[in-house]
Length: 415
Image (cartoon, rainbow, N blue to C red; front, top):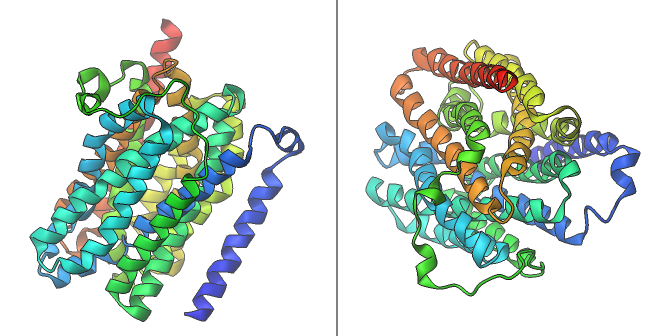
């Protein structure tokens, strides 16, 4: 385990050095843009994403041991279902009672769930917890993105989303890798408790932050009454659709790659996710800055090309080299696209309704991941011969996003 930690630390600090080299002089000149509040938020997100992502590589085997092998697709699908359904509430509440209370609620859900998993020993009980666990990502990331938009000027929005995404993705990288190490060394229950403790650390950081929403209201139960306008913001439909087709591939990866990794003979099921996330980290800030300069559509198109290539190549993976090469391609494409889509959504959001716009985008994100998980499991059916078809399906979804952007761009030019 010690050697694995040293190797991961080496990879992480190499990536940090690459990112620091991307921070050119203009980005460092105005330190007031990235103040203490911004960095606290980034650190909180790192811990939050670590807390629930460390469970992902181990949950398929855990559910299988309970006798639920046929329900592995629901591990991600149920999580994203609740996250998606809760977005209208979190978006509305973040615009009314403040960003910080909504973020705190999401992190506390993670804390509670980690202590409940060891108490559930049936497939039905486990899947019920996955359903409630989704509330965590339904609340915290929505308010977090709104907070970033509040403290960063529009001209630096893509860069800011890239920096924040760097920390979130670092959590996504550390989580799966450390999760597998903890489970292998100390058992699955220790992993659940560790997940809880990491999530509560993200809450403690949030308690030291200042609220950015002006004229916030006290909470009242009537705020939980949501209408169709809270579910869907027409102004951000284009980035929302692109997000849906893009993250479909991520749902496939989360569901199928742990089994593929074991099939190829590797004990640590987080190795793909670590490589994918490090690749994503290495380009997020730089690509976010380019999206500020050249536009959200061109960077999204560029990223999609790499994402499609990564998923296509993953369908041919047969050894460590091909597995990690596909992870690098997929990670670079994903890291290029996501900051652009976040910034694109906020660009189109109405003033005072950023929470709603961001909630719409996240609903698409959860729907795409959930569909990717469910459909890929139905295609895979726990048969190794079906691995290629699941990943090529993900590549086809990315191609749909590419075609949609090109069509929408042509339509905009005509108008």
